[in-house]
Structure formats: structure tokens, C-alpha cells
Image 1 (cartoon, rainbow, N blue to C red):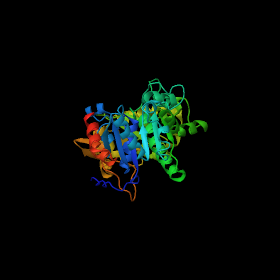
Image 2 (cartoon, one colour; image 1 turned 90 degrees about the vertical axis):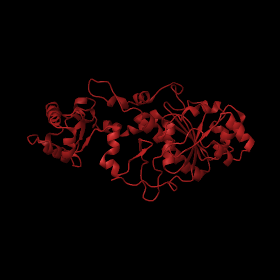
Image 3 (cartoon, rainbow, N blue to C red; image 1 turned 120 degrees about the vertical axis):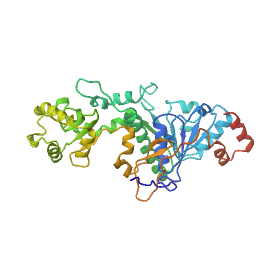
Image 4 (cartoon, one colour; image 1 turned 60 degrees about the horizontal axis):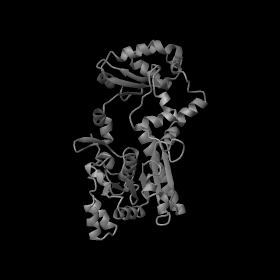
Length: 382
């Protein structure tokens, strides 16, 4: 069963205007999160963006798009008018780029004192690496988090873009923006939000640091179930080449897992005797390898054995639990994830197609009060 997604209009951020300077990765994703929650998000595209909207269809859903040449006086007047009309701005350039464009936060101190200026980068606005190039994997590596994303004797790996760009960058930028917007209502003053991916991922590592400080995070992989050495917390291959995951950390869940795997001779009370892990892990792996992924899903899914199959993106979108929660929708022949989290009263925008680059240029310039002749000049210069 598919749950009908609510229609937009009164999301929790309804009435909020955000200007997003077009980019890739965390900036557009942050804008998508805000747009999903009902904010009016306007993407400022450069003329070259007419080739394609850089962030892609899903990341620009619910937004409006204006195309401006920021190197022209008319384009500068238009973008400054947009920013002066906004509550917040999002940009993901290297430090100093907005200032060189004449659009740094100081430019709007007098004209829009409540403006919250959101900046997302990998290394941050300051520090010796601030001007260096980098990508998600580099930022995660510098936080120490990549070090525990590996198996013993193997190179660390992690899902592309999710931890650094989206979690450490975009999510912390969105959180910072909302915090600063709430503070601006009280103080009447905006401020700069410096969301660095290395900062965000470092904060996300707080639980691991807490476990280490309390002696509950052994550095040796063979003694740390999080590091893929135990028989009860890892992914295992099935008879058909598919994979399933087990995560039975607690004693009662571990006991149920053993029972459902028909390993009744194993003492559940010895779960954390790491000397027994290698041999038992081999037994669990052999047991899982004896059935297909579908067979194990039929036996274990929905139980307290802490189980889930490893699904492809298409399989995940069509899984009954995902469908029951309305977590995905088909847009132009492709799956899009729905907005989250859900609210008891506020309605969120459903997945939809993003605008074509510059689709709202004329309408937005009209709304900003530009004369028809100047609008025609700006449209002709794209």
C-alpha cells in the first residue's frame, strides 16, 4: 500500500524566503530540505547553467530558478534585490568568492540586517586548509571517522557523498540556518553560519568518542563488534549472491537470532567473549550462505533478530515498509525520496520535478519591481 503524500502550502517553514547560489552537493541538498519544509527557495543560476540545472531534478524540487549574469550591473542589481528580500542565503563556494562578487555578508549588513548567511564548505571558512580543494572522502578522513569504516586489513570505505557532503555539510547547514533564523527573530540581527563538513562529521562522531572515553570502544578490530569482527553485527552473503545484515547487539535480540538461525548449541550468555567470535562467525556465515536473501527475509524480517536485507536503490524504493510510509515517489520515470521528518499538522511538499534553469526569471524580476525594458535586457544577456 502506498500512502498518499500531503500537498504543499503550509509546511513548518512556510513564509521563509531563502536564496540559494547554484552549486553542487550540500548547498542544493540543504535548499531541498528547506523547500520540502515549505520555504520559498530561489536558485540563482549563472547563464552557463542553461545547459542543465547543476543539482539535478530531485535536489531542485519545490524551488524557483532565476538566471542572472552577476558580472553585469543589471545582474548585480537583481541579485542584491533578491538577497535583500530574503531571510537567508545559502552558498557553497570557496571562502572569498562571494566577497569577490560583491555579495559578501558585509554588503547586506545595513540593507538586510536580519539576513542569515549560510556558508557550507569542506574545510571551513578559516584554517590552513580553507582554500584547498577536496571532496567528501577527504573531509571524512581528516575527522578520524573514516578510520573505523573498514574491515581488518582492508582499506577504509564509505557510501559516496552521504557522510561528508549531506550529513556533515548540508544537514548541519540546515540546522544552523534554522537556529540563526530563530535567534534573529529575538535579536533582530542576522549572522554568518559557517558549516564545515569536517566540523559536522566530527560532531556526528560524538557517540564513538564517548564510547572510547568510557572504555567501550576497543581499538583492536577483533574486539570491537562495530568493526565487522563479530558473528552478530555485520553483513553476510546469501546462497544467491545477495547480502543481509545482522545487528543483534542486545542479549535478548542475540538469543532470538541464534534461535532463528538454529544455533541452539551456542551459549547466548557468551555473546561478548571475543575469543569465540572467529569460529562462531564462520558458522553464522555458512548458515546464511545456505539460503537465498529472499528466504532469510521471509524468516527474519520483522522479528527482534535485528535483521534487514541489503537492497539496491530500486528495491529499497519498492519495499513494502518504504511504500507504506510513502518514502519514495515516481517522478518522470525515476524514484525520488520523500521529505522527512513528518509532522502531525504541517504538510510537506511531495517529490516533484525541479524547474528548468531560469524558468522563473521573468516572474521574479517582475516581483522585484524591475521595469519591462530592463527585464528584457537581462533576459537577452543570458
